[in-house]
Length: 337
Image (cartoon, rainbow, N blue to C red; front, side, top):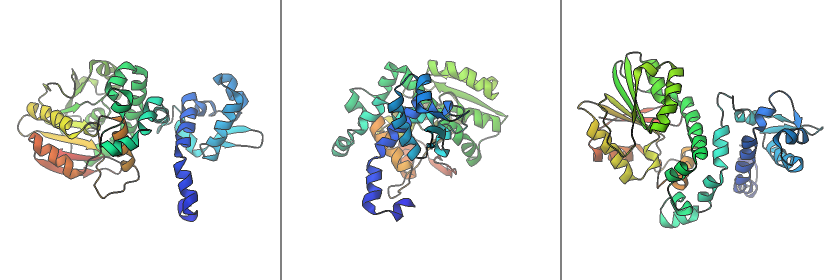
């Protein structure tokens, strides 16, 4: 609305400086400023003592955060949490602190600086900039991997109610979540369907953490944990296979291998449900178009796909396209049989 009132050059100038927002919010998130301002307002000098940073520079950064509405600044130099700053708290139910920290990482930012080369070549930026895939990078930088996983889990947990409500999940049988992380989607489905059992497939390291997560959700006794990877043999016979935000990380050839592995394990009559944001070629979605470029810069040629493109991948792997179920959020559930 503000852009429509301002001269075009003024609105575009602000958009072109958006990287400032990324780094200012990233610093606020990394330092945990929002957690420190919950109880009372503080000056930058007071915060700097606890954070062990330079008070003068901290004030300058937080002043920009106040101009953005993340914080507020009063006449005595004290900062308070603004409306936009509350989700940067670690304990906020819709916390985006991990995501803000991830976006401001040097390893995340560098591929964006090479976006023009991706336009010229048609290839993803992360391997070109870093010399290896994002997955190898995470293997060598477990702290960054944990940060990324936490951010993704937060988003998934917020999407679970919509995912559970949008699809006719079976009352009984077995659901296999392939590459399901700690099992947020699987836990949500099993809680809604007491007669179902689940299988969670991921790396052994992830499954070790999933034990506690599934137990806290009250479904551990109905879940089999099975170590594996997306490109290995999937030795799981299930009635329904779930892939949440998996295919958009990969190019078509890799997706064909992933879906082929599921098809090889799937018994007759079983279904597959791919859960991710679908993006049509002529659609200008305010979020998913940006996510599509995040896939371009941060993965190995990943992308958001249209329903038709997902259906083509299904057919190539031996699945017949089924229904498409929309949620009120960003993701859809695209079914294959």
